[in-house]
Amino acid sequence: MMASLLPRELLDIVMGYLLKDDSSLKSASLVCRFLVAPSQSRLFSIICLRPPPHKKRQFSGCRSFPAHIPTDSKRGFKSSIEAFSRVVAASPHLLGYVRCLHLHGSPYPLVPRLPPDHRDWLNSQSRHLMTFLPRIAPRLRSFGMHLIDWKTLLPEVMKMIAGIFESGLLSSLSLIDTASLPVSVLASCGRLQHLQVEGAWASAALAACRVSERHQSKRCLISLELRNSKIDWFSTEDYIFDISHLRYLDFLGHLDFARIYEKCSASLRVLQMEAKYLPDVFVASNDINSFTVLKKAYFHLSAGTSTQAPVSNEPRNDLSRINDLLRHSHMPALKQIILDCAITYKSTLDLLVLFSEMDSILAGGTQENLPALRSVTILVDCSQRYKDKVIRMIMKEMCLLREMGILRVIRGEDRQLL
Image (cartoon, rainbow, N blue to C red; front, side):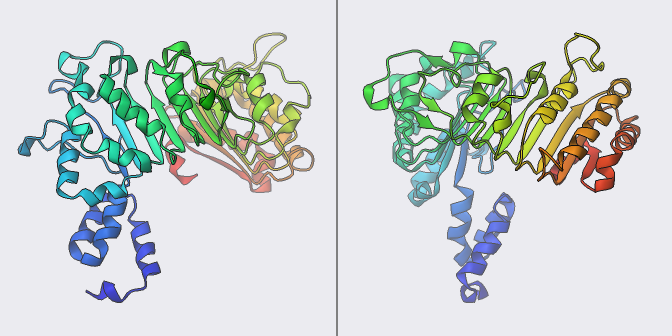
């Protein structure tokens, strides 16, 4: 084939464009033998192993990943773990391509209780896990645990998964709806830099236990995502995480804003959060003025929050909290602000004065505390009937930013344009 005459760099570019297109990658590996290895290395770089859905119920709580290995019922494979075990038994070299593994304990949430045929599913697959998990564990750079209750696992399954945490290359970890994970296991991630936690409530996610002296040093995180979680792991002094060098923070849930930002505001480059968790009142202070390297701020305006403009001493709503933050903060590197607004037509009428206030703050801030600002984007999620009208109303109120050419007000479904 002519592909053998093409420069290696050009082949890498072509394969790079196909990275998220499984069908094209499979076709490329069949068309030309020179593309087999590049295609396989991308197809098997990210693997998601999860149980088949219950016959009478749909998937709930599951997430898809690029290289999900499906169950092939026609060939008698009972699970994706067994299917993957047979695939790599026939082609052992495929294990060398795996760099990211997502392991699901169930297609259903841990609460309420699982159907009987799924409750011990992961334990039932220990024989198949043993054929490949210990071999890929030392090479994994990213690992995800989904819907797994640690205390229900068999000792041999615990040991295999713990081996992944101890991998010297593991730098990214996702804990999605997990329960009872021993803190000593988490502390064994010596090079952890990226942590994602979802569905963790207080002490339910981690089981308290003694951490050995070997694991007592802090893990210096670069990115942290917390969703639907309420935990104090990152605001205490004696925990295993160091967020003083955090660059990316995304949290949709309650945290102690003041304590978290006291630790990481000087290093933070990207902030994404629910606006309702900002303090009701901001005052100029060293803590708030320390967002010196923040480049992107993404705020979610919760639909459930009161949208009335603040009067006297009433609690402030999402948009007024954001206005206070922008008014009192010095962010010399901030280039992009995104507001993700879930609002109704009536609430928009109440908020117009606050949109106008934000327009004045940001337009004046480009000369003072926001000199690098280049883009303000407002995503509008509301009734389809009023969506275009709401967009026009907001554009009219924010005339200063519109004249500066840095304002976009778009439909919420156009997020992919960002």
